[in-house]
Image: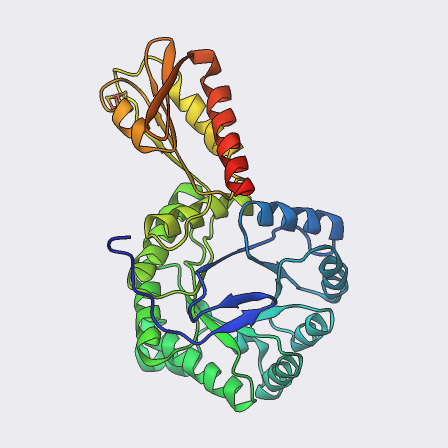
Amino acid sequence: MPGRPRRRVSRQIRVGHVPVGGDAPVVVQSMTNTDTRHVAATVSQIQRLVQAGCEIVRVAVPNAEAVEALGQIKKHVTVPIIADIHFDYRLALGALRAGADGLRINPGNIGEPDKVRRVAQEARDRGVPLRIGVNSGSVERDLLAKYGGPTAEAMVESAQRHMDFVADCGLTDFKVSLKSSDVLTTVEAYRQLARCSDVPLHVGVTEAGPIVLGAVKSALGIGLLLAEGIGDTIRVSVTADPEEELPIAYAILRSLGLRDRGVDVISCPTCGRTEWKLMDVVQDVERRLRHIATPIKVAVMGCAVNGPGEAREADVGIAGGRGQGILFKKGQLVEKVPEERVLERLLQEVQAMTQESLDG
Ligand code: SF4
């Protein structure tokens, strides 16, 4: 694909059965927002996330009951689970014993070096990787003073300290995230760390905001870095149901030619020439085809001006008109469809294409 970014060469680690870094595709992550102690609700959300394309799921483990629940959750899912731990190293040790496939810790808030060492050594002995998560809000005081605030340089130096410490404990399987709610600081920090280390990088923009703002900030922050080849695994953050993150993540990756998963819906913005309920159809198509992993391009266009051209280019497309649409399949005009049947026909065609691709 023209212009496809050349990826930075990072070393590879494995989170459960999923490789991250090296020549592995950029991996998509998300995080549950159920109370982890509610095993059934958490398992059900994990299954929905996986259906939407999530390849590694992070779960908050804020207390001993959540550690206990983690062990139960692991029995019901096959996707790798990362335990997200803050402050208490005993929870990290408990999560490892409960079968976590990865740990996300911020060594800065775990506290004394001996506690971090115990976690790193236990992870090493179990072959479980860490994510060292550095946030702009948790950069050490001396670095804040040295750099005059939580700058990109301060975040990178903080990450390097933690990386060196963990490596001294004998653990080399780790990845790093550097997150600030300021997009440009985040981007700059990743660039700097990428220049001086081959550590695999988990890329995201933290506290990105409600869905539209969060999608824009994530697309910019993650997209800028991926376009420069930086990033081995990504998480889009939005204040919404975590399932909403996955279509955004795959849209970013698809736009850069890095992953080809799911239905790509191409639609026109509508204008005074639109004479049918295109917006309703587009929303329904996007919602009802989200779970499909097969890469299929669907065009839904408003009229006969640009519509047929785009619709012809897609795997399946509709160019709307007054009271009816023209259905194209692989560039060929197939039939005229009454407006009220457009959605149903599009869904039928996509399902048939999905089946064809499954049948090989
Ligand atoms: Fe308007 Fe037709 Fe273009 Fe849609 S495809 S924006 S309806 S001119």
